[in-house]
Image 1 (cartoon, one colour):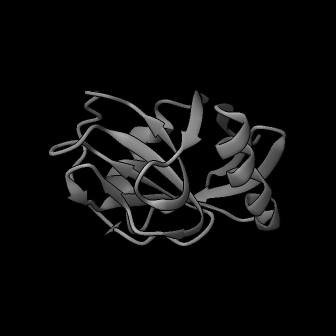
Image 2: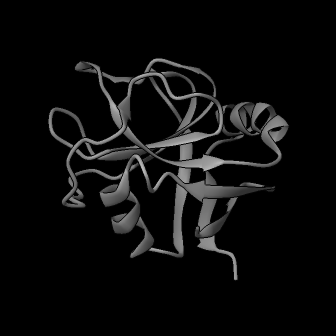
Image 3: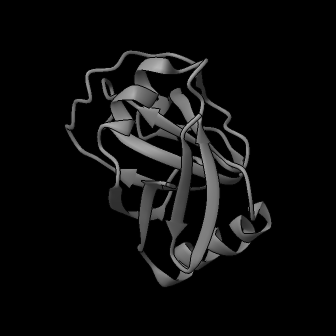
Amino acid sequence: MTKLLVTAGPFTFDARFETEKAPKTCAMFARHLPYIGKIVHVRWSGEGVWIPLGETNFGVEFENHTSHPAPGQMILYPGGISETEILLAYGGVQFASKVGQLAGNHFLTLTSNLDKLAELGPMVLYEGAKEIRIERVT
């Protein structure tokens, strides 16, 4: 199993890929590690932060998809009726966009410091975008 470290703003989280349920999404994302981006607060979905990725096409289909990720779960919306994006839930989420409810591939789960998510979300909401880094732990 690949061990991952997610650094979002000032917080760090251990994480794991959901390789059994989302093997293609995990394999694709692993090729992009280390991944560095910016998280902003969601617009329609509730308590989550997201990485807008525009027209990026990662070449994956839906697998292990959900509209209601739990806190600490990351989902990838592969594009289609809305832009490609990655969302990290920190509280209650009903994944949506301006075109309505969406579903994304649950491919990564945070496994430590979940209590810090309750600080991360409001920090991003009130202070603005924060860097996120996802990398393998050796």
